[in-house]
Image 1 (cartoon, rainbow, N blue to C red):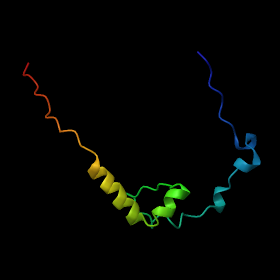
Image 2 (image 1 turned 120 degrees about the vertical axis):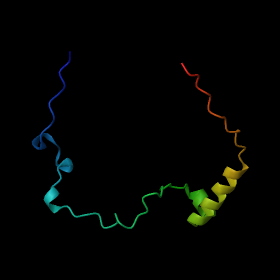
Image 3 (image 1 turned 180 degrees about the horizontal axis):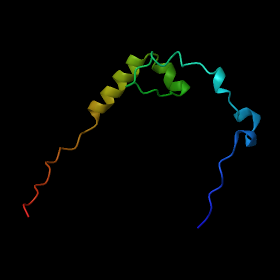
Image 4 (image 1 turned 180 degrees about the vertical axis):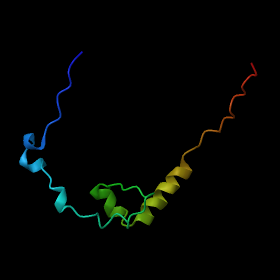
Length: 81
């Protein structure tokens, strides 16, 4: 059985990885975001066409409606044993 390496201490970390938590502040943007929203980054050529979130959502909804949906299957009956 292999031994797992011991965790590094703060002294072992490079200077750029040391963080002084006493200077941290709460996220001022945390309450403003919608928890159900998903952020997607568009490529520049796509962003030129879709300039608003509404235009992206409308195009995606049209695409979803154009895709044929497979018929829903009924759940298999379980036999009483």
